[in-house]
Length: 348
Image (tube, rainbow, N blue to C red):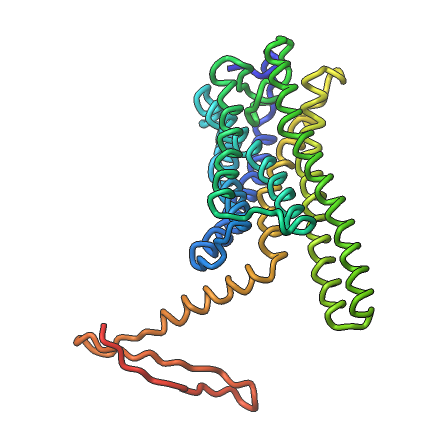
C-alpha cells in the first residue's frame, strides 16, 4: 500500500520514534481518564439518567481511541519491525475514522441536548428510550460512512511518511472527491453549525433568565445569586465545549481540506502530521470537560472510592468465617489518634 499521493515518502527512523512517544502518552492519559469516567458510571448507577448517556458514549469512544488507533500508531512508529501493513493500515484508518466521525456527532448531539434543556425545558424529551435511540443512530450513521472506503467509495491509505493511515484525501478521482465533500459537510460543517447555534442561543437564554431573576428577587437576593451562578456555569461549560471542538478538529479539517482540493502545492510533511495528532488530544480533554466540570460526577467518584475502601475494611479474624468491620476516623485535634467508632460481627 502506498501513500495517498502514490509516491512513498521516506521518514527517518528517529522521526518515527519521536512520533511514537506522544502517541503512547495520549493513549495512557486517554485510557486512564476515560476509564475513570466509565467506571464511575458503572459504580454509581444513579448517574445513568438519559442526559448523561451521551457523555458515557463519548467516553467509550475516547477510550476506544486510546486502545486502538493511538496504541497501534505508537507501536507502528516505535518499531522498525512492525510498520503498517495493508491490513493494519486499514484497521487503523477504519477505527480512527469511525471514532472521529462518531465523536463529532456526539458533540453536536450533546450541544443540542443542552440547548433544549436550557431554552425549551418543557419540550425536551429525556426518556431513556429516546436518548438510546439517538445514540444508536449516531453510531450507525458514523459506521455507515466509515464502511464506504472499504467497499470502493474512496479508500484507506497511508498518510505522508507512513506515520498513520486515513481516508485518501489526495485523490483526484471524482468519486473520491464526492466522498470527501460529504465528510466535510455531514461531519464537520453541520455539527459545527449546530454547536455554534445552540451555545449562542443558550448563552442568550442564560442572560435573559439572569435578568428575570434579578428583577424578581433583587440583585442581592440569595435566589437570584444562585440562579446567576448556575446559569453562568452552564454557559462557561458550553463555551469550553465549543473551544474544545475548534481546537481539536479545526487544524485537521483545514489541513485535510487543503490537501483534498489541492489548494497549496508541496505541503510539508510536518503540516500533515501535526494536525492529525493534535485532533487525537480531544480524547484526553473530553473527559476533563465533561467529567471534572460537573460537581455530581466528582462527588460520585469520591463516594464510590469511599465505598470501595470501606469494603476492604472487612478483616477476617478466624477460620470459622467470622469477621469484624471496624469503622474509624482520624481526628485533627492535637496529636493524631486512631479512634474506633463501631464494631459489628458479620457472618461470611
